[in-house]
Image 1: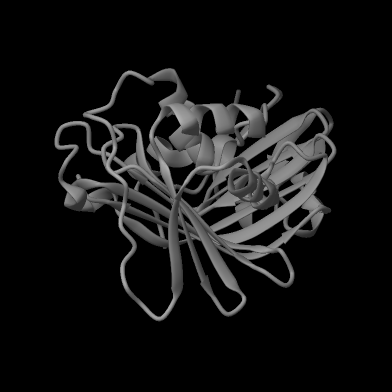
Image 2: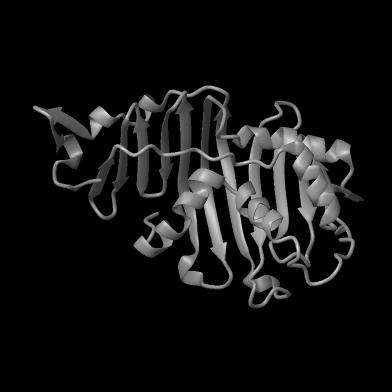
Length: 267
């Protein structure tokens, strides 16, 4: 999957720094007044799966927060490998499916891949690669990693004030927790699914509103992350190191290997 130049840069830092939850809640917590009307309780859809709708009690929100920690990029050591779908009901040209997502961190060093782009932060060197554009950007500027999760106590306080309901659905070992408010202008839904035996997060979805047509679900923006692996450890160099891309010869940087024909941009 190759993202267009316009599409990728629109989503790049939201994906790297926020990774779904902050994109929904971070924006929403700054815009609490943007609501159409008090939310109506969402009714469960009859199915073979056990489904329960409930108000957001502390126990279930605690369970939600605990599972979300699988995606906490602020951990000193962590790895997440996943496939990302972004479905834009407002503009189908911005829809992209099956995007590779990898984030691996060891201390201050990290590796991140989103589709056809890679970011490597190693020591004091930062490298950004665009395969589709055949460009490599080299910078000494530090790349901050922002907290992608809302703290549990803040999450609890916010949900209580924003009229969300929480749907719980269990099928075998799969358990899905969904925060729902179809009338919220920031985020209508945040859902996560995990394995009840291993405790591993399997997928996460956010569904955000089109501010121009908030009551039309066909124009919602959906981001879905299918997680293939997550771990509380990380070895960024096993994906790609700076030395795989650049060599420093007599104080000058030179592209190497498969990147020899790329354009090097120094910042």
